[in-house]
Length: 86
Image (cartoon, rainbow, N blue to C red; front, side, top):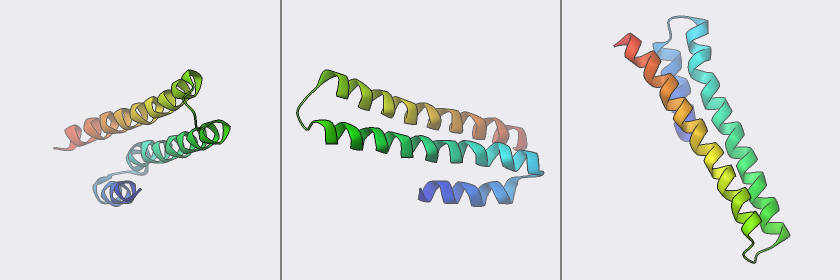
């Protein structure tokens, strides 16, 4: 969350246009949304059963994969924009 706030500040500083700022900020917001959904998945899974269940493990793993994918996309977008600037 703190890194997202820092990225917002950096995006404000380095953006040349509203479109570029949107391109930098949108992946941060999407990652926050994915994190919220992943937390909800984990909370529901834990409420259903504290014992090991293969299906619950798959649900948690896929939620974590979604978070990782979001951060990879965020890094790619930021990398492309920063590469074009420097």
